[in-house]
Length: 455
Image (cartoon, rainbow, N blue to C red; front, side):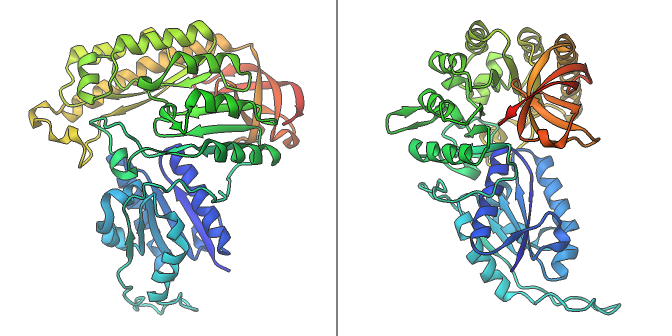
């Protein structure tokens, strides 16, 4: 019986992929462990969106070498693995397996193959001054499978309260800054009936909340089904109390989708709609395929239909060629929309993306980009603090997810806002009405008002 430890970096899709890998390994008799020092296999599932994320992984692989010297296998999987390929084998002390996102069905076989070449873990500590034998070169398993959607794979879920349900892999957009299409391939959409079967199984297991996942989730199409139809059917599955989705693309955001969101009680009145920039010239050079005016019109649709919806977004500053005027346009958009939450980044150059081929004199100096990011964060946090302060005193229905880091319980509102409060552990997995007593500007502290029926 072998033990596997998986460490995940990056987006919700990576979290979902780690659950898939854990399920595939469990089918072959692997037991999950939450500590690398207990593991025979250590997998680092990676993100390639920004250079900082990749440097973190390389540093972490170096830290994990102590377990490799004792005989554990180390694999790097996911987007960074697909992007860097064979060059990862010798990084940070060495890696045994490099595997891209479309190859996870092969994981047990490839681990067995590379393990057969490895020196067994020493039974006793090595004597002072001696070294473990040099290990052979590892394996790479890369490339894209146009049909791989992992149908039939039973994911090993990390939560019994909320589940990620991937409906789509890859991306057909080619935003000039983005590496995703080059590390995850073209868009592939799952069979809607298989998706609904998966959601029904989750409901039977008592999971009350699902999040539909896709790189551009609302571009989903399959055999006459579009995303609004799929969302409506998922929302009507008996036992599912909350449905979310991420991340939609503004170009595919329609009035039909707004209508489903507004009229289906189970669909959360919460929307993450990436904007990336508040200026049309920058959006055009990013190849985002919409204008600021079109984006704002869609925000108006949403707020007309759901006045109290919680909105969040993604923004990139210092894209090559971004002028001070264009940056000010982004600040103005933030003030106009007033997002409840935002994920804010400075442009990160990614080899292989079209933006890297722009003239070098257009690249924004690092210190200018950092100053723009800090001002944007300051602007957003001031708005967020005002929004959160205005909600203090409300009673919100909270899905209780787990124990809080500092005691008590932690859950999320329909608007996806974190609330901590005191209450019995028996509430985990159920809904509770909680009065929001105070806020730190990004989370709430609350008081239990009424415990509702179990989910």
